[in-house]
Image (cartoon, rainbow, N blue to C red):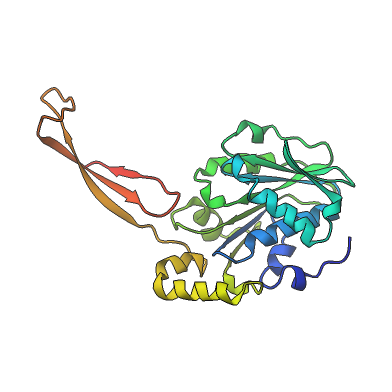
Length: 273
C-alpha cells in the first residue's frame, strides 16, 4: 500500500481524530464537515495496517446501509487506490480484505439478535462505527454493543467505537455522556463545513444563505452546535359519561396538554393537568 498523505487525502481538521487511540471517538458536526468521509477512510486504512482487526458498522435500521455506509466504504477503497484488494458483497452485506480475510460487518438496531452474537473468522472484533448515531434514542442499545467489543488484544491493537452525527437536540443522551462529562478515554469533537476544503463555491454560498435566512437551522447544520429543544402545545378535550367511559356525546370533562417536539427524531411527551 502506498503512503497516504493526510493533508491531500483527508484535508484539514481531523489530525486528532486520525491519531486517537481512546475507546470513544465522538464527532458531532454540521453538514459537509467530512466526518463520515474521514471515518470511512480511517477504517479502511487502519484495517489494512492491522491484519487482525475487524470492524462492525451500525445504523438504526439495517436497510439504510446499502446507500450510505456500504457505498461510502467502497468509495474509500477507490480513493485510497486499494479497491482491487477488497471485495464488497450485498448478500450477506459485508466487505472483505482479500489478503487476510478481515471483514467489515453491517448491522442494524432493528435486528438486535444479529448484533449480540457476532463472531469473526480472522482476528478480533476491534471496533464499531455508529453512523447517524443521533438516531439511536436508547442509550441501552449503545451499551449492549459497547460491551460486545471486549477481550484481550495483541500488542499494537486497540478497541475503539466511533460515533458520527448531526447534533439536532441538546437533550439527547449523547451530549450528556460524551460532551458534558470529561473522560480521558473519549475524544469529543465538533466539526463544521469550514474545515472542508473540498467544497465548491456554490456549496459555501448555500451555507451563507442559510446563515442569513435560517439562522436556527444554521446553528446545527452550519456551526455544528446542539439544536435547542422546541415544542408546540395542543389542548385535547376528552368527553366522558358518569361511568367514566369515553363518549363523544358528553361534555368535555378533562383537558390534556400535549407537547410535541418539532426537532427531528425526538419523542412525544404528554403531561396531564
